[in-house]
Image (cartoon, rainbow, N blue to C red; front, side):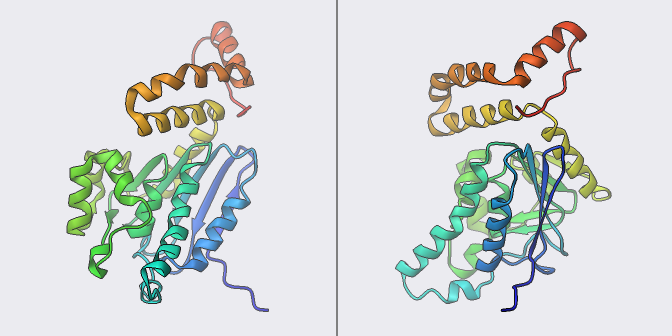
Length: 262
């Protein structure tokens, strides 16, 4: 039986940096086949992964979803099965216990934007732009983009973004606190890799703890995070990285520790 074409590539560096590249044609449209290949790539992430960069080849990050997928749904019940499947992808990425970085080099629409806001950090090239344009087919975003955008930018901004269906430049989304950093177009890919490699070289379990604290904040604000932060932080005393970094600080001064992720 003929194997389907490879739509993704996974590179794993000995340092613990993993780079997942989506290469599904010039438009990188979402299909269930692409989703399955992304899932398979995530399945192959080693246990000692310390950071993940998600990037795209092609003329754009993505022009959206293959609309024939929506056309194939014949009932609300059928559609909900599809939408539940689609939502599982950003949920899975958000649950990863190490830093995740999304690199947007150009136009980034619908499902790709929803994956972006499920990542910890979004890097954008100056030429990049973003949109949730589901209104053109009478739909609302189904992969968590609306609510994750609201968590970053506020409910009012999320309503504007989704209801207008406009494309917003990277500079605007940086001002909204959605994009973390806008970087020059030239050398963007190398800069994104270097940024993620820096995270991979850090205290991986401390980064996971930070994500855990912020999950509690998202669920219940500062009081909910306060209920958990001391327990989460105290557990880091089980890690080699904390003990070695404290000793390095005392012996050699700040900023000289190296981390293993353990």
